[in-house]
Image 1 (tube, rainbow, N blue to C red):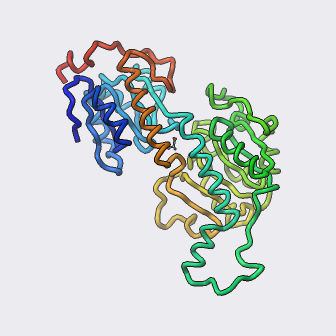
Image 2: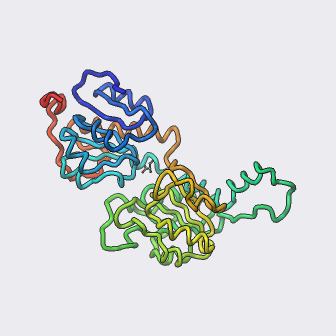
Image 3: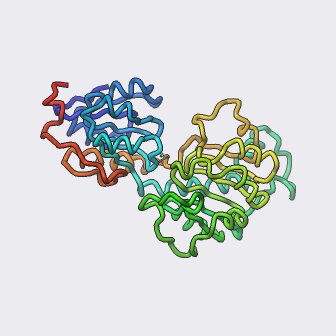
Length: 354
Ligand code: DGY
């Protein structure tokens, strides 16, 4: 769907986003909108990106070297997400394409979902609702649907960026004892990306080693980005090191957890339950064994899905594009070392006859 504008600047937007942000973009550029909630197949993504100056993308769009090769005019990829694991950042930098993303604006909303999943699993909220709907609620009894308290429990947060800290603030207010580990503790060699590990907010003390966090936590919340260092970092060994009956909450990326090991840990009872907003493969396959566990609550990658936050994300994603059109790096730039392509006033297309 083309949104009319005579500008030579061309932008492909890969999904419908908040209307005010889209209108702001369409006032400055010719916008080609993929007007469907289902992602464009990769071939369409590449085809529609050809000749574009910018693309506004989602976590489920794979932005790879092949796309950059075929989109020589591209100056900016603006991801409607804080996570960047769908984008080949090195290839973008080599191609002179700035990459923007949306950190900060979604931290509270994602932290709220992490806390919601903790309550859902610990207090068996979804299981209890199913129980009632199945007309199995016959009477009040002192043993019905017993769960676990958050108050007084230890929460271990892995990754302490803006989302991890937002989870910590909420958990502390609920009376939890909060500890955290920084993700570079896990496979130490690789230096952490600047901005991921910020200073702790009170009342949380210094980071603890991962081994201690695993051994002491009643709840574990994953709040790391997916990188080569964090892929599969919670596997058999880490589950075996957890306190028996611990509850795992993942609002980060599915591939941070080895899903086979997760299923084994649930089967053996080592893990007391899990709240998963993200999975290795999304959407989940209908026959995935995870769907059989009553102590697992699964949500469809909705960590940042509130009306307000999605509007803020859309505004920031558009700002990132307009920054580049104005000759600057995106205000939230994931590859600040990029050498921006020269702006020729009306977009490369005016020269190339795209
Ligand atoms: C993110 O921001 O990375 C989320 O996963 C998408 O909202």
